[in-house]
Figure 1 (cartoon, helix red, strand yellow):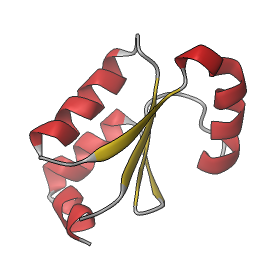
Figure 2 (tube, rainbow, N blue to C red; figure 1 turned 60 degrees about the horizontal axis):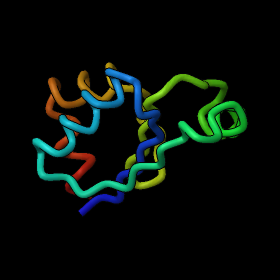
Figure 3 (cartoon, one colour; figure 1 turned 180 degrees about the horizontal axis):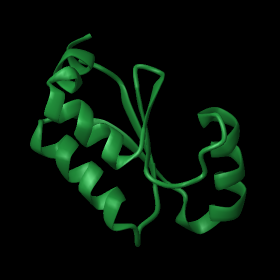
Figure 4 (cartoon, helix red, strand yellow; figure 1 turned 90 degrees about the vertical axis):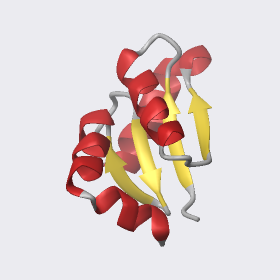
Length: 86
C-alpha cells in the first residue's frame, strides 16, 4: 500500500474533503495538522511543494499530488487508484 501524507488545518473544508475521500477509499494516511504552528509550517510547505502554501497538501509515496481538487481529479480519472497501488 502507498504511503500517503497530508498537511491540513482543522478549520479547512477542503482538508476535510480530502481526508474523507482518502478514508472512503480505505487509505491509511498520516495527517500532519499544522493549525497550532500554521505560519511556520506554511513556510516549510512552500519549500517542499514548489511554492504552494495552501492546505491541504497531499503526498503519495513522496510525490507531491497537490491539494483537494488535484486529488479529486486524480480519483475521477482513475489515476489515484494506480498511485495508491504502487
